[in-house]
Image 1 (cartoon, each protein chain N blue to C red):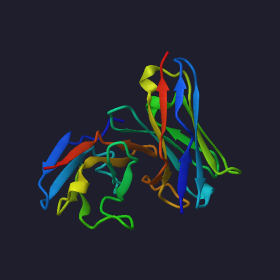
Image 2 (image 1 turned 60 degrees about the vertical axis):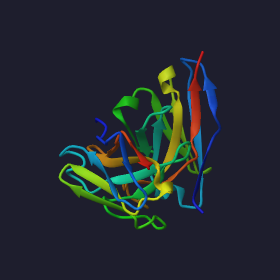
Image 3 (image 1 turned 180 degrees about the vertical axis):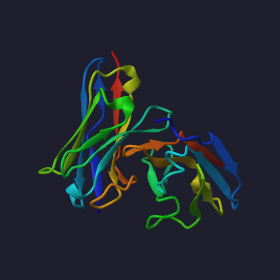
Length: 122
Length: 110
């Protein structure tokens, strides 16, 4: 079955960077865009951006353009999301979520990873 | 891109129907039939329940239905059950191939 398995929780100091991984299985990795979504404690879902694993094209939400980098490794079927210059406001659960459309961008997220909690604290 | 507007909370009794609204603008909700909805129980991963405004993924109960009028999309849950108590989020395509979520609605089953 389709699965997205994310890396474990992280504790980082302000100013540091964090990279979250999302290892996929059960489908053609290059056939679906991958979205990343953030959820701060007690808050709603916030879309961060997407990456096309077929060619590496990315699109970031305006709030994340300066601090986030999304990449993929097709050989390991893994997507990565790196956040730089962390602040306490970046403390959140980060989810990878597969775009639903095979071979095209559908704009909906059908399969989600289990989430990775990133805590930023000095 | 501003978040879509959802009511903070709605409630209903078992067996009743409730509707959650999701208001955007003429450049997002009003322009594209690409509204999706997600259900999230406390401490759990969001679950995909509606896409392209009205379509249900395989395995999602037909008690969940979606609609859209102008710049407002809606999720209706009929025959309310205790297990429906959760947070619900709408999401839509926005200009330049981006997405935007609503602020979320907490559904309480009385």
